[in-house]
Length: 434
Image 1 (cartoon, rainbow, N blue to C red):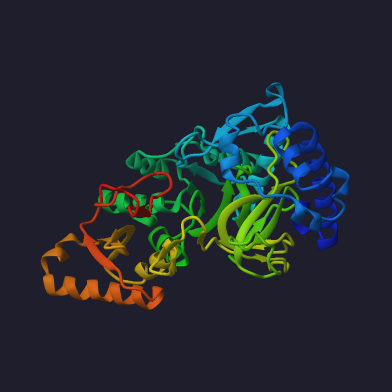
Image 2: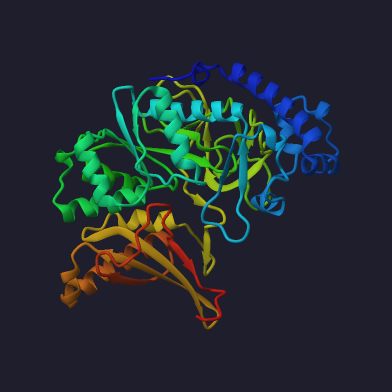
């Protein structure tokens, strides 16, 4: 189901809407946000000089540190009397990122999230169980409103309490599951422990976000739950969930580009890259009233595809995020993304989906340790088999990364589970205690 006519605009129609909305946004922030006025003045840009979409490239980037430096309301473009909702980012140190929504922002956000659900095939006949946390995190409330707008029934169970989650799935006949992929994998472990099989449930589709997952992890989720796995993408700084979403073609995530303008830049130089290049995603909000974002550096690595999709949608698609420019580790001169490790591990029988990467420095040399759980803890007693498995993992990682790593096999359930984003990388290179 295509929810909005904006998903089928011609490229010329879309660009006309984008330019009109961009010019209106630049006009607003210049007069209402001192931070942006100063940035534009420094760059020698006046609102009236923005005549083409390409003029956006002359405007400086907005960084996450800018939001923290102006905590809590310094980047707001509207008085608090017009703000009807606050949200804040999770998983950060120091002052959090705070965003505010006007009533119109809430309407636009809800519509964007409705597109996410519709593209995955959700209808008014579904029962959607939302296993995101409710609170300052945008995920729960955003998807809740979007799915309700479609007419589906929403079960706002929130995160955690996995046994209770399974009870409601069985008793209510839940058909749609909204959560992080890492939590879903944990939930399948609880299912196995409780003796619950996928055929005992009525689940048919998953709307997974909050963190990315590799094709290998997607395959594992689909096998364990017998569902359609779809990913969606969002950032607190932009709107929360609803930035982009997969349709049933699974050929990239459609960006709601009538509300959000995307660019791909070289993460090192900041230069806009040619069409089809892989680089860092930069986003500009086109309709956000409460706290507009101009050229916000997401740090996520992807590429754009403006060819129409087989599903009938014409809005630009982004590849599934390959990694983050700030999560990328340089180990002995090699760029390493956690997703590369995950892709290797998901192909090896007997290995669970939960892993961690520990980075340390020994004698001025970076060392990478990959800790991964076994699916059968009794294998730890079979030393020859264990050594063979360790060597297999080490060799496959070396083939992928071109560097050697230490591999540590752990008992099942050793790595901490979480209903939110999993912490895959522990970097101890600058920790004096190690």
